[in-house]
Amino acid sequence: MDKIVMNSPIQVPELAVTTHPLVRVGVTGDRLLVVSQGGGTLLSDYSLDGGSARGIRLEDPGTEIHFVQALSEDRFLLVSAFSENQEHNAFIYDNQGHLLASFHVGDAIEDVQAVGDRFWIGYMEEGVEGDNLLSREGVICFNLRGKLLFSYLETAIKQGLPEVRDCYGLNALPNGETWIYYFTDHILARVEDFRVRQFWKGGPVLSWRSPLVQAGGFAIWGRILLFGNPRRHLYRGSLNRRALERVMPVDEEGEEIRFDRWWTRDSRLFLSVGDEVYCYDMKETIY
Image (cartoon, helix red, strand yellow):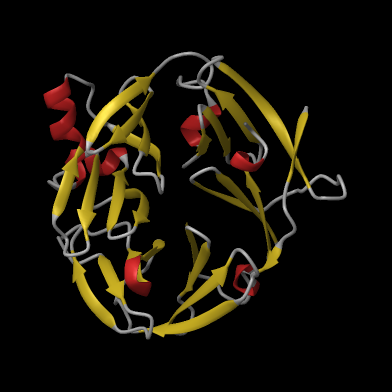
């Protein structure tokens, strides 16, 4: 089994779940954000370059938060995955914790990723098959005023592509590309300028048998994917070679990392062990 060497970890005390029982993690650029809601809503903003952090107490959003992202102009986006009755479930804060705006962004949300002053949302099957008009679009993009900029359903109809029945994961990259893995037909689509520019399907990486179905997200660099599954196994897949293999994460001393949780964003994989967070960036090792 091939090994991937993770970078030295940073300390994130909030990930000690006995201390903060409601913890959500998001990555945007060089920042790792942690939201905990035990005794108020606290946002911890960590620098991935040096591990320094600042804590911001937020005005109460009035609901459980599932996603957190950094926005342009030092603002933050918090989103609740569920909103059965059209309640506001997206909240924008400034860097002092003041609530600037809130709006409704659909129900049964699978993932949220922000780039600058836009953010992308993918929906679970329960949302796509439900009554919420936003969720039925499958994948959408909003600006920070809550205006809909992109609908995958509308684009799929125009381009003659299968619509999203269940968004398994997405990855919004800084270069403007957004990658979406979804059912119908286990398609991986590359969206740029709000059009599907390429898509892949089939093979060991993109099928109902693939562990990617349960990954909840993926890192991508070139045409290589990296992701985990609920059994805490890591996989690397090649779209060009149509190949899939397990990989083992190790620290800089070569010892296997038995991780508790994982996240992915752009070309990076993050693993947590207790309150330590390791990072592996494919663009630093795959050319």
